[in-house]
Image (cartoon, helix red, strand yellow):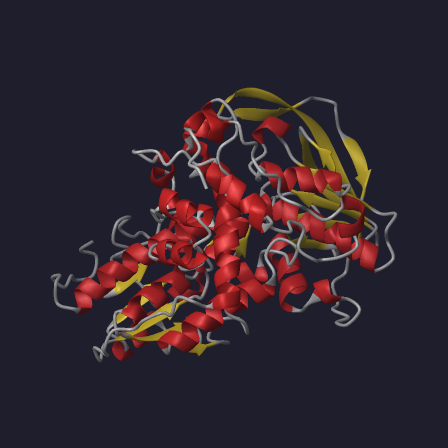
Length: 484
């Protein structure tokens, strides 16, 4: 096949991702994005200009050789694409689905300056899915070192840290508080965005190949303290995420029918509420649902609500997203917002709740809101929402879901006085190494940064794993508590 010139490559349109019809997908939890076909993937890979200085790599938190794996896709050598990808990214099938490539690698693609960037995430998914089916790249493990490492939390940061440390020959125990591994990948992201078969396929492959010991239903802070782990293991990595939900300080938050998005999505995901009627999971969803917030978690909660209404016979119900800023300030991925609108979610922008109202039995009946307008920028650079005097109105509602962010659960820090934390409850750790203020303890992911992206947590897990290995190999000096 003749090589195309750059001008010819730039004339190839970005390949659209096939998706389920919006009307049909409202009534199922099947994956919405269906993946590129082989020829479409090859055409998309052909668009890559193979820049001599690939800025896309600068935007990747785990430094994947993006031009390299795309070139392998272009030539049809998917085994080589997997090899290149997995040199830096252990979970391509997952990242290809949930990472915000549009604000990371794709944002820096040179094609995006005058048109649309290469669809790096869609190509990453092709590579990851192919490897899930074919399993051409075995995870090799170095000879045993006799060193023992405990990884607390099996979300993105913990998984990557566990895999990288185990590949160096260290004995790894992965401690998970819930009954399934995966962290937010399992309990937080809906089936229609990230199928559980993909998550479990990636996790099981790594555990089986590397001999990682998985212990579920292990709540650190209850079953064992951090000090007790340090008595048993040579090193400990904390990847416990940020799963403690935030609520507004307004009247009515304790009424029956008010919940956090974490609780709601965990019930749907872990109790298989998405698989109705085979699993008649007790997920209560009303006919008029309000989700407060406009991040990706809010979109997930709203879109799950739509589907549950359809599956449980409340198809004429309404699902609202209430957000105190305008559409331009919405933090969720544009694709998720578009999909939510296509599925019938109603957006109430520049609106803020001031009270949740209930009946004598304590059940939610409505929500009083106030209109907002945008004032001067706040510390984040976004214009601060200001109430419009006299604009209060009541919104009939029977279910209220808060999706306003999360913080680390303090349970894991019981009797861990030497582990320094910020005023937000996050662990203070070195950005490059993951070292905390407690000797032989590393941390990474949302427990350090607060809620962030899957791939940024993976990057933190990888950096910490490299430092843990260097420490266990005797290449680094030990440190004492509070020295970091």
